[in-house]
Length: 432
Image (cartoon, rainbow, N blue to C red; front, side):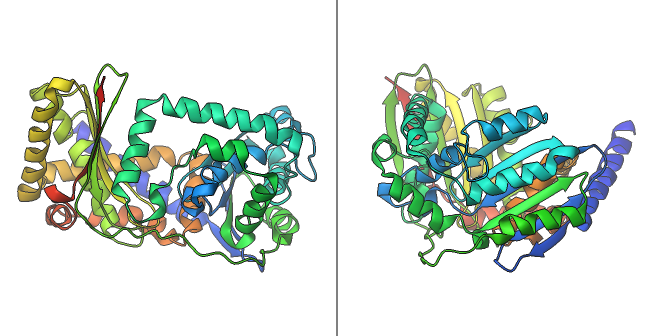
């Protein structure tokens, strides 16, 4: 009875917090095409400021491999209003804040978490980084070495290499196969002029979103955004959008060897794009299969058969064609047994689907994850900005209600629609 009561309270709190986030967010479209999302949250005297730019590795040509990530580094090295390469970081530190950035296949984002008295300055600093970077040659040269070292560490990481091999294997036509980290050759040699050209082409207001959540003054926040990002103009140079839809084809198997103790495997099959309602079923199906200790694959392959050291599955949502993937680590001698057991569980999942108990448990877990995440202003700004960048804010607004609608038959139909043994791509790295 106590457990049931806890779950009821949890679901109520999840729904209430979620509704507060969705209803409290104010969306604005500035004249230059910039999207701004503001939400007042006075629960703590903290503000999170995110700026999203719709550019990532999918926008790069081979001779630009890794440039989006390189620019993420370089905009920290001095701007028009903060010319000293350490000025922005020192300002943030002096105000007790935290700044970070990330580059993905589809976006680059920058964010600052700061106490409320410093958030206006935080907006000004981030805005200057994405509109007025100086790209000083004296900073580009040492930063090339920093990123090249990062590329080398990436190559030495078996999980990172497995992901790189897998993405380039399953995405044969679309740009999602492009590496985020890029190549040493490009980073070492790309001219400053090409860096600036790429920046000017992509860092434009129509491809940006700013999301500000926390203890803010809405009127004052609108004013500072209008005076900073609102003054930026779009570039005249046009460019073609990358291909983000992958056509179904037979899966590919790739095997590699490396200096490893165990065997690493990443297998998967294509899924829906962000605009499809199938993404909600995907989240549930892959959670049931391999998320957590009680998931099917973990229970059977790890606990019962003791074939793997770890196994998990997830769905990667992207603007274009998504991917369902399963990762595992095991002994080399168990490879054939792991394959056999994995295919058997997938076939069983297609035939019988999940139990209602499994389905309800995963729904509760997903809602709980949202509850804990949305308690922070950082995660609110993160979620609001991310989905707005791809013009899919309705996914965020309706996520929980659509998760709740998923049935056992939906999961079975999803697996039948997207999975078959011949569509499964697989990358395995064996120990030398």
